[in-house]
Image (cartoon, rainbow over all chains, first blue to last red; front, top):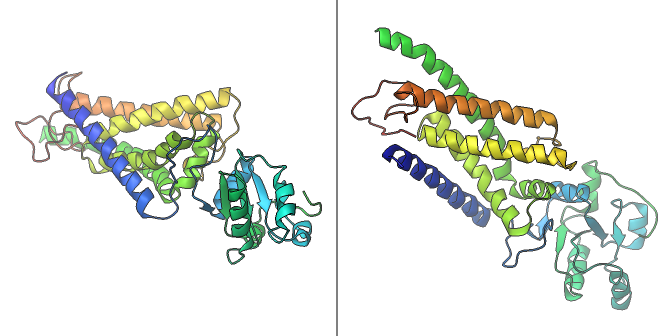
Length: 160
Length: 172
């Protein structure tokens, strides 16, 4: 390898390293980055997303086929919800919630939502599912109101 | 004088192509740097890698694009930057081609959310950019010295004749 080629290789590697430093630095220091875990999740998993996700990410997950969990009361669910979403009202009894969660797969990724960012029900359902052994959960903090406002698909009726 | 006159048309042409390539990659990189989560999902959509590797690519590739594009536009570490872009375009072209062959319906992730779903036009576009990049590399190497040799020290955009030393020391 001649001198010129060695220099070229060094410069390419330097740019590689600099890009890695900037990329991971941005990821650590600023919000909205990719969340890394110590254990590598299964291929196709979305476990490297941050716990709280925005609407756009939520919509991409929706198009990716992820299942959504509606933490609102059943009446609100029936009035309108994200297509394919499952109703798991935070206000239900613990036993009832356990029964509903029984139909879910703890290995699967779920996106939980409520009305909007001020609604605490999504966080409650998240805590419950974590205790129940679910590891791959995300909270779409802008909720159903934000989803509707953004013009994303909605449907009504049914419980699940 | 004759040397200077002969250098200018080549400089402008090289500069224009460099600006095009650099501009495209900066336009591609910025949205992905701003929303790495979205790019992460796009990577997952190709059903090739997942988890930690997908996350690493999502935070690393956009900055690689940005730095290499800046190098091409400014003319610093010009050849090295071009080679990185050439490598990226080669990988992207093959990846898009295989994705279409596999019948996977996914977003390109080329320009953040503006890229749209993968189509043969994306493959064609990447091939054109790859040709331009390869041409610029060959042109720069040929312009600086004998055919097949690395371009000597000098400003990447002036195509200056080889000299004993250069203030920038940039041979790419």
